[in-house]
Image (cartoon, rainbow, N blue to C red; front, side, top):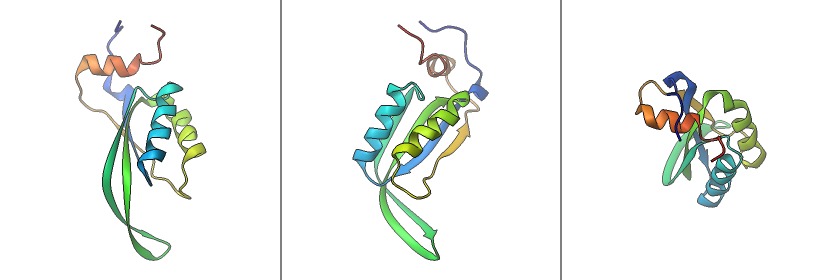
Length: 114
């Protein structure tokens, strides 16, 4: 059951690239299982071009699109860092400015017992 509607500033989208689908699925499952995120999309087949240690790199990766409460960010970040194989993983939180109110409420209340 959905309770009071969440405000948009209480919800964020967190982007995190991972080296492969297995890593992404493992992190995604843990984030949802431990209730640090309401939902994680694992998007395969992205290509990242970036500069690292003075060299331009191009790598195949997967992207995690994480829907979470802003107040859970520290725990969410710690959970990602425990499993992420990169020396410097991308973990970027973007505030939600507009969304379907019922979806916001679902994200806000994802950790309530059924």
